[in-house]
Image 1 (cartoon, one colour):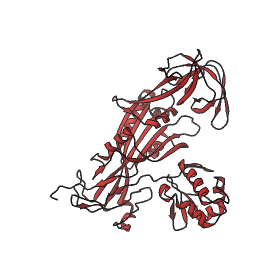
Image 2 (cartoon, rainbow, N blue to C red):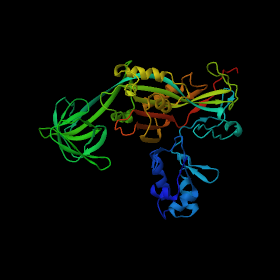
Image 3 (cartoon, rainbow, N blue to C red):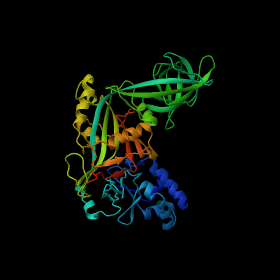
Image 4 (cartoon, rainbow, N blue to C red):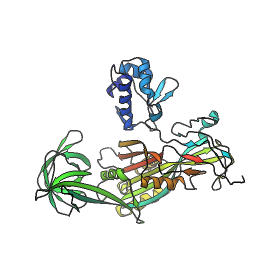
Length: 447
């Protein structure tokens, strides 16, 4: 547990002598990233070690009345789950990991009950549920079932859109000038060009400088790059061609599976740019579900062989891209066999196995640094909606019919995870969770 005292909160930017709105804005910004950088290092707000503070510490840090602090917290209670612990502590968790609503409608002679599932903090019932039952750990189990483990080939392309509206693929070895401020990666580190720089395309998203230049890195460090160094383009940058025409150069990735399918993360796909070009990648996809035992006792037509007192509710999908060279780097096998070795290891995962714990134990790859982005409640696009519907209607994961309409409310977390001292991540992951899932009992008309 990480306890934040008043001076810690002040170091995190607590507004002094501010109103409730300023306190709310500060807390909202603090929680938005999903992580805090404390003296002990980077801490995930929803990780195994909770981040705790007290209302008294918040009051002292801001130098205001207790009622002002409470008003600043009140607006965040539902959105960020700022929970009172033991009546005096405030737990800062970030957005809820998932939330499941069971409808109260009468469908085919069966009446549902309204409950809310949050296995990170136990089950919080809304009505008609025995509180004591829900506080017993064996009654609610969060599970992640392996859906697929596949090799991935990551391909990059660069497309040029000129000021006159013409669009074309950027040809290999084409010369052009990148504008000052363009975003590039060098040896895994992200930065911006300090001045215009003449380069040549090296295929995909890679370019080579014609002359030396300087790159301003994220933390203000200035890095000099020599001619012909490897630079990797990021997203969209402005360029000028030798004939004077200007345009926008956009790079995009395509993650192709071995069985000719694709993994499309839409706007989140660019997180894969953090992997070094050419590294073999492996995709692990898991369906996330909550298993409720002896919580709901309706006589419903379940799916499979489980008794009716066991409910499994699909909550979301976890996609994880892993560096396929991990077993080789850990000394487990030759590089050629490394992706296959990792895939065999991942296929043995059980529903309650932790990816991070087993990777650390088997290969020595731990998370020493993380870059995480949380997206609040949104309506899923076509690709994401199809993925959620596929999992939500999988009879192996559910005991009920889950209704996923054209407006599927969900939220996502995307993150890149690094070993100490390494600029390239060993894992890039995306978790997608339903915000609301309508669960209906399905029974035959004669039941």
